[in-house]
Image (tube, rainbow, N blue to C red; front, side):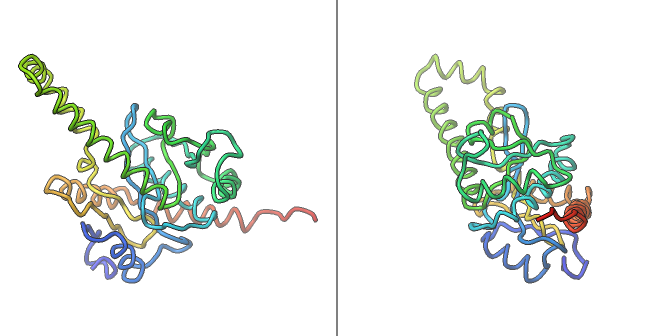
Length: 255
């Protein structure tokens, strides 16, 4: 239905690999896109950033990451409302020169990518501090990072609940703090984000968790609606075309 234009978006809580395969073979990739990427908002001390890829591509080539950066920049600008979002590549050190071969090779390409505000490397511990708006990485690393963060958030919620209900005084304190605790839970609950958007296809595809409940599905539909309303696909296409034109018109260096 999306491919034929009878539907604007597709939302699924099914298998991520199946959604990726169906998206590529049924809807098709956007012109110029090498590989689609899953992007999801991630809570920080200052609000939200976006992380991609978080699971669509376990193995990537360096040239994929500049495209991820363009797609992430468009998403951060138009959906999250972040002006001139900063872009960093996830690495094991913030200094230039840190990282594996993928990070080192992609770093040089990102520096030359037009239309993005590339600021270098970022360590995982810095992301939650809100130092970056768009984090680019391979799907293997991104998936592990996001799932570890989600599990840690759930662990902290369980520990807090156990401790706050351990005794009478704690229970009274928990009752008084209940509104604040609910706000904390809402800010860190992944169901509030709905699902990850599979950017780079010719149609909007949103992939929610398999364990999604009604709230998560509702928010996944909201995310799909936002993508359509903000013309994310058209803006990504324009960014990719600009990047391609810049490369094709670049004057070759003298040998």
